[in-house]
Length: 85
Image 1 (cartoon, rainbow, N blue to C red):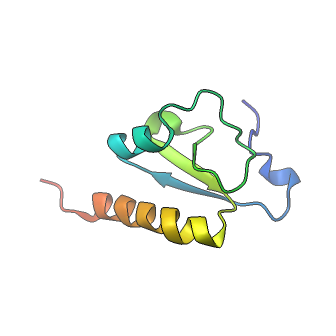
Image 2: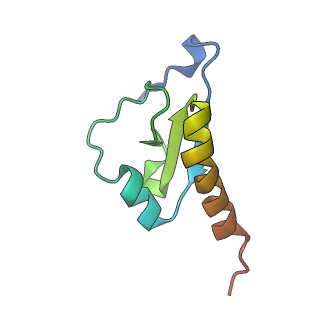
């Protein structure tokens, strides 16, 4: 697979990765057939860990971060922080 995000060749590019539950992963990226892993500001399946339901975003804009990413971070945190039964 190589490096589909090409992070090492783009000095000011970073990728934020989040593990999601199945429903959220499917809602956000489940229908993507050929994602552009080098695109900025787009929620994508993680290029390596999508099978584990990880999503990724390169350089989210302030608006995307506030409106989309922050709630996803909270969801991921809450899912992992709740006590295991």
